[in-house]
Length: 341
Image (cartoon, rainbow, N blue to C red; front, side, top):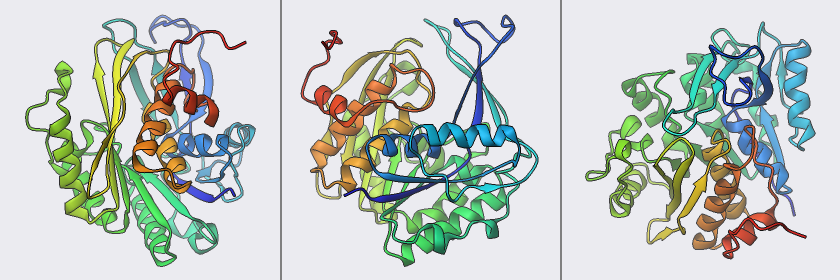
């Protein structure tokens, strides 16, 4: 039976130059929509869950276009608030070879960033929900957004709803000091934390001592220690960490680990050739939530989440358009990419 899952954050219009053009070269942009929590909701809807996305968009055709994009992929938009002046935008330039991808935000004064906490009716939105998810991007956008997040997790905790948070530190949005202050308060209500190889250090000053992200030198034992420190500090039910080894903008090593307080579970490692890496972490979060809410064993859960995210790297856009069966096929070892006839 499908579960009601609620995610909360900002959806933006994404503008990308075609054909690996740089911003300074292009005469046109390709349009799609996405955002951390919207991407997670899309994954969960795709897997058959009742995924609701909560946000605020302007009451104009651009805001409606974002809503239509969510609806197209089965995300429930009943709780989206309309109003304000503008939809946030981000410009995304595809990287290639040794040239990294580049993101430029144009989201200041967006409808979501300027929304009021009282506009979100959490008692109603979270009624009969089994899971609530947000990311560290949302409280970074404004004091009001941070307060709305706090209201949401407090309500969720009072209702006995599982709360997950992807730390998702963004240096263009806030400082490590501010992130630590705000996120430490929110963590009091969180059950499952998701992080990448850098987030824990930037937000909570928990560092993988002998690993070097810039050089792609990631030691698994270091991240087991990071996961345990996060788990113990915030009295959690689980911690998941994605591990990305960046060889170039195209080629990465990709794996994940999960810690439930008693044992570490490590996924297989994938060598991925990237088509579009935006949303890769969100697809991992969506896969993990799906697996855990459907009572997968921890090893199965981390394998499902990592495989789902591996496949996302082959898909243009923010959303992960893969089926449960496609993910399970990959977890079972079929990674040849042969034509399915």
